[in-house]
Length: 142
Image (tube, rainbow, N blue to C red; front, side, top):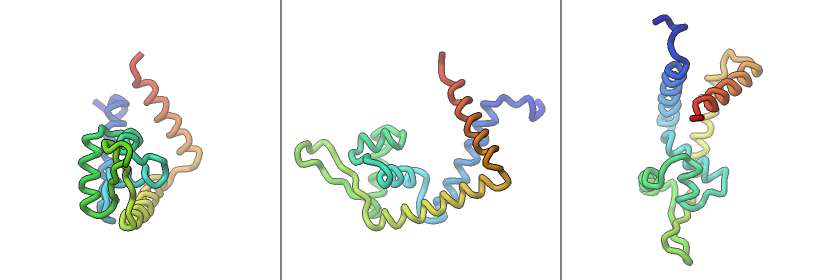
């Protein structure tokens, strides 16, 4: 099978895996990870304060989020506080250490994005965004 014959879905999947690994390596180099970045990003830029809201914003199930929050809490990046009126609801708060990590991760993510954009014109990036959106739409069941 020639490279031109590789199914688009396989090519996109391989590319996504390579980019995901490289992005995570970039974040690990500054003391974080992709899940940590996604949680801190959602907490810092949104109103996602309960674990349920946060899981939805990050795109993971609650048990997976709980695992990430446990390790982030042990590291001192977040705290969880029970809601007084409903003890089943926990609010997640970024600590000062978490804010500092977020800033490092944001710089690393921005640098990584710059690497990916190298040699691409704005019009090419806009076209890539349109093609990826169309592929995503096409992949949905009828």
